[in-house]
Image 1 (cartoon, rainbow, N blue to C red):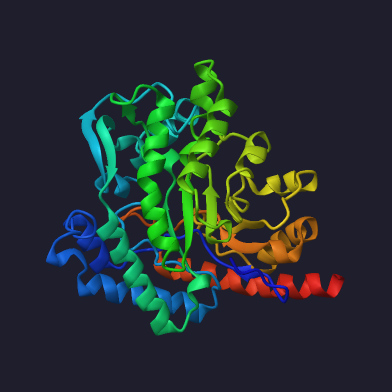
Image 2 (tube, rainbow, N blue to C red; image 1 turned 90 degrees about the vertical axis):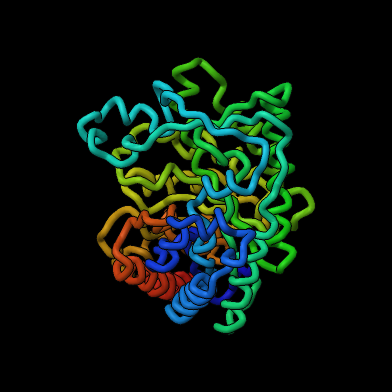
Length: 387
């Protein structure tokens, strides 16, 4: 992963708003469901990836993605790349991944799409096996072709994929003897997906939103949340075995939805465990009103040597386009704490975590990314002047 001694680099979390032709593919099953057929890599998908790569490159974002155009969502996509599960309808738990917010603010959630979704469990009933190599190779090939066409270096490009600890909101093991054995089996299965990306010379980003979401549930059930997170880190590192740390980014967040977020686990409670993930870069929310203040964590938590902090300095969930000076303020205070060379400016989370879901209008998204680039330029000059 490139770090710059000249200026603060820029990136984002990965998902960008899909154009209609890509969303249509996902709705018809053509992105994941038809990945092995002649329609598995339609020209419309290849063209769309090339175009979104060109747009990121031209706007000045340094470390770019394919927008997640090759996947139907940030995490459910992988269930079509794993064998060994069956899906059963079930009732949601009393405290789900929304935490106690759902109980505290019932009027907010009453008509919210997050609570209108049907609840299903993926139940592991036989040995897990990864079957997604053709899907992943298609995504890699489309992305590399787009990067080459835009003249963007492969080492400054990443593909986001789900962490083994977030593959399902509420998945159940009925095959493996223990939960630990089951989770390591997931890691073994997904290792091939991660290697497909890094073997191509790209950076892999592991997305882990579910890690933070069981805090309320574990507390209510009297379970050891930190112990579970510590085991989760072991599972992640097992999935990353043999992959160079400089090709790994780890994204942890408190979910992408606009909501109260009063149930979020404090960063300080888990940051020491997060930093044990064998990645070079750590992508963490730092722009939204619930978590911006947590930049103060880095006043007394030391970023390990050789590591890079990738803070969110623009929000995917708020329509306001952040002023570049605000972006610069957020970056300079972090650069002074962890070092300019150890910061890459980013968004809090993705702009479209699933096909058909967009957190902003496309023009607003691009305006936010342009402000990110300009804010990083301002912050670079300010930090250099103060040196």
